[in-house]
Amino acid sequence: MPRKKPFSVKQKKKQLQDKRERKRGFQDGLRSSSNSRSGSRERREEQTDTSDGESVTHHIRRLNQQPAQGLGPRVYDPNRYRLHFERDSREDVERRKRAAREQVLQPVSAELLELDIQEVYQPDSVLDFPRRPPWNYEMTKEQLMNQEERSFQDYLGKIHGAHTSEKLSYFEHNLETWRQLWRVLEMSDIILLITDIRHPVVNFPPAFYEYVTGELGLALVLVLNKVDLAPPALVVAWKHYFHQHYPQLHIVLFTSFPRDPRAPQDPSGVLKKSRRRGRGWTRALGPEQLLRACEAITAGKVDLSSWREKIARDVAGATWGNGSGEEEEEDDGPAVLVEQQTDSAMEPTSPNQERYKDGVVTIGCVGFPNVGKSSLINGLVGRKVVSVSRTPGHTRYFQTYFLTPTVKLCDCPGLIFPSLLPRQLQVLAGIYPIAQIQEPYTAVGYLASRIPLQVLLHLRHPEAKDPSAEHPWCAWDICEAWAEKRGYKTAKAARNDVYRAANSLLRLAVDGRLCLCFHPPGYSKQKGTWESHPETSELVISQGRVGPAGDEEEEEEEELSSSCEEEVEEDRDADEEGEGDEDTPTSVPGSSLAARNPYALLGEDEC
Image 1 (cartoon, rainbow, N blue to C red):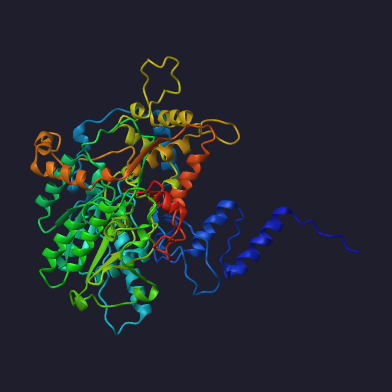
Image 2: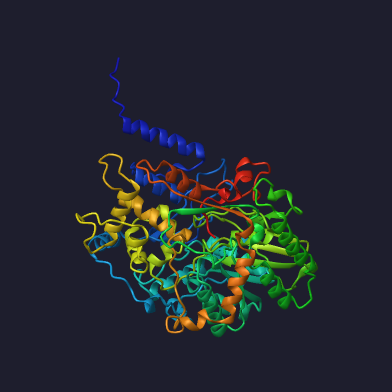
């Protein structure tokens, strides 16, 4: 009897991997010879990727990997619209890590917090966005796709040829996501460009403004969202800045969760989370402003009286609510018709030449990730109809919602336009998924040099023997001190987990609990003028009128524990919340969680 050949664990593992991939329908030729864990991850990314940027594949990092669903070649690919960013080199990551350990942080002056849009985007340069190339009905689908792929490759080549990777910001390299934008622009009558009031020039590409107002001839409404996170004087200053430089804009101030700015705020209460009960979505600030802007644009061509009646019902319902949180918001008012867009909606179609077809105005919502597009739609509807998450790329394909019989909203996935912004600022703006950042320490240093993190978080220097003595801080010291205070420890050696601490600080910044606001040029010298501006007083009064005065508001401080199990669960819920809700926009009626606290459905999401 011949002797059996030895069969190692590694060979058994490879055999199981081959069997699993054959089961999923992958071809055997797609497997590489590598059998490492990282190699397996890279193979999965290549096999599930359906983007068209093949010439730059080796420079691209694909984020938000999702498991494949079902079998067969025509099954829906959940990774079709995942984020594609340029990959950071290993040398660059190590260099930034050394700088985080060695570079002493120095506070920057107020003038350096002023952002000029000319420096960020450089209008009339190659920092543009891809346009759909010309086509006709005689072209086949394959010809059109190939033409779009070639045009997109030329677009990427021009940008990377004109700017080095060190100067370029992260921007979207996935053609499938840009196709979503093209379809939204083709079917919309009015475009809403949603920006975050903390850094609106980051989210406002001038090339998009010129294209929409010039070539397409559409009205563009700039929505300054999350105005509750910035001082009213700064909000008014940004509004006048955009009016001055872009006169064709219609500007609307919006927030889904208004608060009275006259109420005393504790700047050191970073760990205190405000839990409000009652009819939160119906208290949004800005729906009436948006209605007035749309009425001015449509000029009576569309009957918007049903929208005005809905706003009146929402205001009356918010005033009637007793704030007990026991009533179900989903039971109030008519249902919202949701149209799930499939691949058939992305078939080649000509731009909609007929405005306000069938007496319906279509409003397209466009913006960067984490600016609050889905929250804005929830605020307009008056209840949660769109799942939201602070993880960039959560909205994977556009959907349409009938706000009223004559008003249709279109939610577009978040898109990152190319610019010359520091990548650390993009991380703080929530554009890059925090859980997948390779080196978060320089972003923490960028934040700490602009707001006093050590004071706000009551941090003690890790090398300080005398707490009263002054010590120079670097980004690594801040992360280590925060890990010591929060009890973040590594599993084996029980050292301070600085990576987890850095991610925690960045999440606080994205959530607005560590609020970094940038200013328009000249704001520091004219701050007194903006504080005494009449519109500032009006904004303060309007926020106080619709704020949570009638709601129950509870503040509870997060307890510091060495295990930190509660925060781990909370972060996971916030990052993964709604992953399976793409096809179920509305929450389940009768949910005990919604009955206790509607805001718990959002976790610690965007404002």
